[in-house]
Amino acid sequence: MYVANLVSNTVTFYNAKTGEYLNGTLANSSFATQVNPDFVAVNPTANVLYVSGQASNSVTYFNAKTGAYINGTLANSTFATGAAPYSIAVNTNANVIYVSNTNDGTVTYLNATTGAYVNGTLANSTFATTGNTPQAVAYNPITNLMYITNFDLDDVAYYNANTAATTVSSDAQSGPTSIAVNPTANLLYVGNNASNTITFYNATNGSFINGTLTNSSLPVGTGPVSIAVNPAANILYAVNQTSQTLTLHNATTGAYLNGTLSNSSFATGPSPTSVSVNPTSNLVYVTNATSATVTYFNATTGAYLNGTLSNSSFPTGLSPSSVVVNP
Image (cartoon, rainbow, N blue to C red; front, side, top):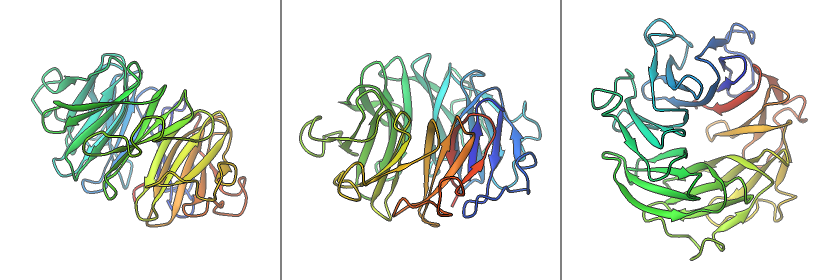
């Protein structure tokens, strides 16, 4: 399991089952990134970890098992993107990663193993998005679609992943900032930060699962900032920054796991920022920016791994911003 630390300018490697550090200590298991790493994604097939940096307009490639830079040094393993890269999606079928660039309204395509631009240059491999401030990006291997939320338009756009051509755009509620796709159920989920909801869509055509935007948008805690889905357990997870909770939903109907929002929401550390799920180990991970920790939860019940929040939270670098797991 990997955590990007925004202020420490590092990425930390953990044992995904126990919370132990890969190399025994936090310092030995943390590897230097570009300035202000924001988002982390992993490619188990290629054994590559990707870390984006909004301040440096770049993405860095690491060996996903050892933390070594793929080209020997940080500089040689860091590749330019568009302005303020926000999110990364991985397409293992085509060996491509997609990086959404918030400040210039684009998405950049890079080779997933080498960092080379898919069309030779950054300019030729960077495509305009439908909105001016694209946020979260996801990829669906079943439909070969790429999805990007647009903060300025309050919508989500569907793209042909090969060409970046738009196929459809669907309205979201206010502040769409997070996304998750469930190929098994053919569903797409968008977390709406300003409206405290998650909207459920058909992942192929963009239609609302319950006919309308309102009927297909389900309340979560206050300030959802990150979502993840567990198709094996049919559970959807939302991390709510303002209410400092992790909420569990049925991934096909949106129903709360335990009947009500209150009973299905579990306390995180202060200022949670990101969530990732590990179906193999039946664990969910949440990063907490203010306490500089990552918390391990049972993925089907919401229980803490070691009984209490304190005992199940492990130190990270300063201001952890993103988490991802490599099952």
